[in-house]
Length: 609
Image (cartoon, rainbow, N blue to C red):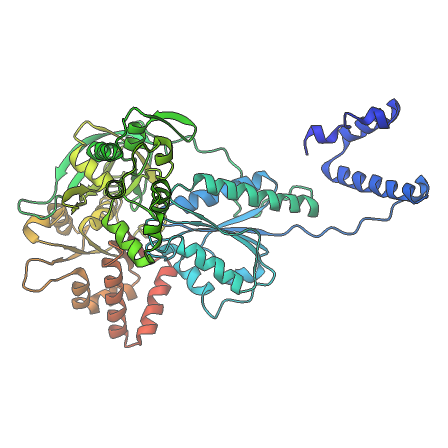
């Protein structure tokens, strides 16, 4: 309550004597919020009594107020793949604590879902991975909530902040699923679900302010005294002043080596960056966030299609800039989204064309056309630069698994990059970040970076065996794992690695061989898919080594999978289920449960993209 509300109104002298006005002001200056509310009710009742002909004494000894309800418990759960959901949930918990609430903050991976029946208020921040799936660490939580084991939740109130990417058809699918499921279980929404695209900062902030204002007001009514935060609650804290995606570190490129050999159909690169003076640290398994710039050629092509000068002024997030600078550094200019289709359709009057497409046709259209292609196909002369820019998403950082260990490479971070290249409308296109690193970043270039923690992809305690499965650049974190173990010691290690050709695509070959020789790496199995008459992948090698793989798992090995979410991850998972069912002589459902148990215990970890 502000001081303005606590003082007597300006028109008080017209209603009160000078002495009365002074008494009211003096009293207001000494009241707590609780006392002010009581006094307000008291005087309202007094006025009612006087109006009915009673005297002031009728309320001189008011009846005791009805007991206030006890403050409700608050839990904040997050499901995060790249760290955005975790960051938002932690900020939400800190803000809640600052407002006198006592939130319990938990990753869905660490939360016991059977506790849901005991929760009262629940705030969920959840990202969507791939086509409508929850983040990998949250899979077990979703499995329980969406199963018959989930209890009725008539006493639970909840709100969902969903994170997603509008370039995917199942936009915010995980958030929509959990929202619908909690409703089906009888829980009551505190506020409607909010679905956020990749530019989530503003809608997430609005949702947080709205929901915390509601809960804080209720808390003040129920129990005005600020409660002590329970164990595990996020403390209020000042924002970290270090380097993050909003304040990246300018890292110098100190090495750049082409890993793929002559004749390879790929051009995989090893890039080393100096973190000296940054204060940044990381653990094996973490990722390097790279704040990319758009290809100047792509920006030039888009300006030409719009027939607009790059010097045209516009405003982004309250800051003045030019169209060219915004397209180069701040806005996504390649991948088109449903939001852009709607926006461009409204500007050009062609919205009916896009509206006539069903969801599959729109997805195919977006896959086959970049923003520049849509602008060329549906041109608009004299479009206002600001209105055009308002339909674009912010350019997002890209994440690369770190391929080094600080124990082996102090003040450095290494990444493994295979540039994405393809043709579209008979024109060469490339990935925003991977193309920049491959084509426009050289030794001594300075690039903005930060560290993105990945707590669900970690080495086990020393001495425990590990099985590492990856293809292509998915081998990067395993190089970090073995550098760490070489420096600090560790148990047995087994690597399954796949690529196209032995001669040209055996990434980090000499390092693996050296680790095999000195015992840091115990076993290695490789699969080169294009070297034989039949394609051979890592999942085939797993099946061939089924007995030993199962034996390692039974002996406590930790299992890691890194690579493509669309093919590698499901194919490897299927192979693991099959080999467990075969070796343990159990049904497929039991083998699936075996792997789920490994996940719950942190022994089956996946970093897929």
